Length: 98
View 1: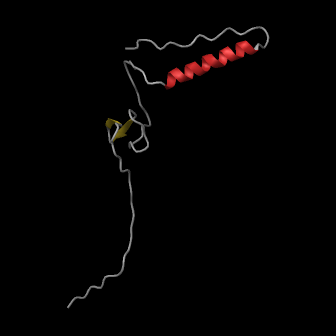
View 2 (view 1 turned 90 degrees about the horizontal axis):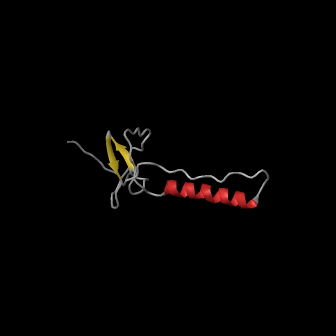
């Protein structure tokens, strides 16, 4: 379990432009973004999730959404219909009352 998020240590800048320094800085920043995108443990005393999606239709496995006040997790194989409204007409109907 993760108790602490470690931030990368950025290299100290030289007095003048240095290509090696810039390459090192870019690699460090790329690593930071990569680590942030990877799945991992989360430990928190409190959490506020605002503006959650209300359907799982466009989400990935493991994403969460608000299903009318219930927190749901998208799983492999889940199907979400979303909302569809449509009308159609075929032929005609005659009604006679006698």
